[in-house]
Length: 236
Length: 391
Image (cartoon, rainbow over the protein chains, first blue to last red):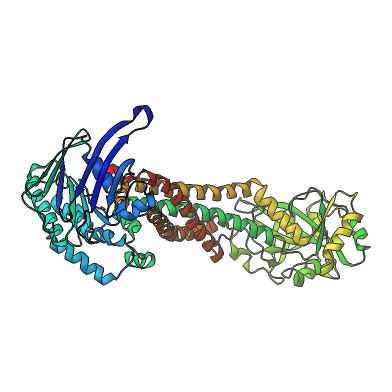
């Protein structure tokens, strides 16, 4: 797919209703190249997370247009958004793993959302995914007995296991120390490149910026800077 | 367990895994369900005994239609009726026989200082066809004055003491300042209104109860030629006796009325019926509490799964899975515990409190239904899981 997986046109968004309504996004337009790692930066309250949740089908688009994998999100109903969410992967600031489920079962949740399948093939896919992330010896551990970095890697495995075309990550390294943070993003980028996955990541973390293909900076609901770095995405 | 549930649902049994992950909460929930089950079982057990003893109180007699006093709610309560109605009833074609039944309660002061409450049933010796199968063969032995049949299992009396009572080895005891001779036994057992029964001739009855007279029996028993004609005969008798202060009912209806009165209008029945309701309520509240806390604790995880595209019904499924698992697992200790309590109650009250399959199945189905109600209530909290809040 050489078409841009995400195209945003004149996106505006408001929070609150009536008198208390406050505009959060002002006329955002951008399109993201397939297979790239795009970093969205900016101070708190600049609207970057709002953009991410709109692209990720977690909020309804009020004004403007978002084309996600060729589908218009403006006017899409909750059922349609729910179905589209199954086509993308999410990585959250907190790992948000289910504490009662082992690493294997947590990753399984990323597959089961697509319905039933061949049980053995699934187990192999899960084990392969966890091994890629260096967790082959932690497959049947509960999150409670994993380190922060390991948990975040399980969360990445959960997001990637079903082979989504787009990954949305919200400060995936915020809860990690420098070393495991860098490790996590390097892995995410390597896997993305290998599979042609487009990654959009919100971060405050300057260390990650070096790895990005493109850096977008937001302030007060507006896109104020757009830098493509020298590292070009493989496919474009 | 996980494997079975996984196969059953075709997905990870998240509900069960969640419950298992918090053993303290699981134990509390199961204890709650078991306790509620036990409450319900005990109440139903006692209600069952009440029903059972009401029915067995009619065992010593055989009749198709009963004429009872207008205020007669049960077999043993109510005013007496006039014996002349017996002759009027006999004049109705289709009525083959009639007999007066005399009933009264007396205290048996025992040598150990305890007092035992006995219900006395009395029929004329010649009315053998009105005596129950246990009594009929022995009725002729009751001809001598003060000869009676005594209950084998009287509450407060060692069964050994009465086990060997026969015509050859009679048992003499004193009631109402008279010496009474038991020349045989019958088995009715303790109920809610008396500790046991004795059966006597009408003559013995009248000497035991000097204030009663032969002209006013407690009930008039009728037998018919054709059982199919009972409803028509009841209607005819009602018409004929409409100016008398009496109730004319088929014996089956009289028993049904007795059961209904004692289980729904008497405090005893009402209290136990209310106890069942309370047990169910306690169960629902406990399971609801546990499930809604569990949902609240997992809102973040549910929101994550929602963000991943899981539909709302998936979360309903988790909560209902938890509810059913709790109901099913809690029922097992509840059932076992109830059997123990039944044994204990039978021992203490001399009432036959027993488990039966029908009741066990009924309580199990009720438990699962109550669990589903709790689960459904608890799912309302799921609306708090908004994936947009995760960022």
